Image (cartoon, rainbow, N blue to C red; front, side, top):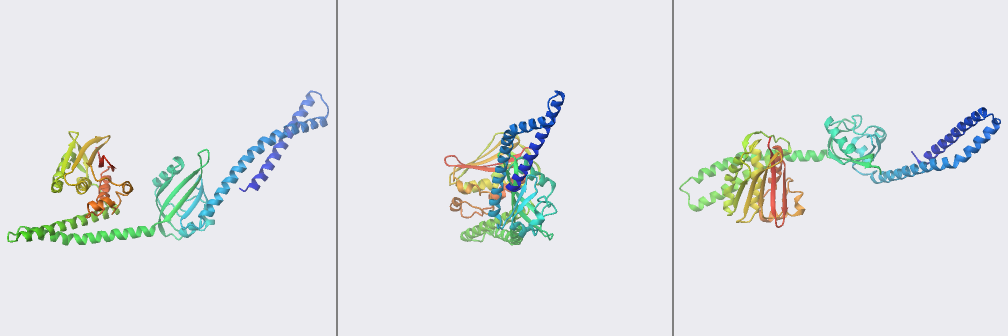
Length: 428
């Protein structure tokens, strides 16, 4: 509502109050004069006028002071809203402003371009309803969203399945920010949506290509491995030929490992990773895994030291996924620690979880790289200088495998202390 309109209403309201007060006073005066046998109606009328005139300044002060504060508040709010509208009117992202109940007050041009709905079809309706572009998520999603923005009064970020006016589906990345007044109550919501349908399609195409290429590579690489193993047993080969065969075998093994990693990444990206849990002895599983990894540490004269602070650790987990996490963390420690280093592996209890820690004194992970360490294909600069053969997939796979087993994974890295990777496995 505009300020002039508010003032007009305020004047009418004040006039009504004055008339009401005067009428009440007149009635009281007449009643008193009748019972007290005082003078005529004209005297009561004069008294009512004089009494109204006396309290008029008091009424004026308190009523208009309150209205002035309210007008100033709404004027400032309207001014801020107009400034925001000017700033976002031509933004390519879909930007919506709603009231505290989710009724649309404003949409920019980007909303029209993305959804196909005109502003006049949107304003005044509930945002995200099936009548507009929303309604594509389940009830649990919307319950979580509203709790986050209205009860917790925090920013909500997520991906939603929407539809355009013509019915065409699209995927949007949405950020909803609650705007609070001085009392801490929600007055507006500002939602910013970006159409990421093409990005999702490109990611899916990449995943499909990686999966197809990896499956096609696995068969010939396996055949090469069997052939190389067969030749390795040929006693007629010279020492030089045996050395070359070993080099070929190692290279082939690296390619097989890369193909397996790519397939794992494809399964993770497509959310096809499923934990096949079974009862296992955690300590025994770790010891068995260390036996297979120890040969790599021996080549660098490194010591793998295991410490178990509990007698029994029976868990229900996917042993293969556990192995993915454990092997990646220990292999990284071996690859990036210098020759002769000591690597400590500990198993302990932490609340309702078993905690596995893999520690080495160096190298230290740079602070600038730490936030990206578990992302796909990412390798920090110092890791590239220490080990040039890495793919940047190990920690991404380790994290997905740990979470699929119901656990968490994190790390701490600081000069003078070293680097420790932790991951958990639930007791039950």
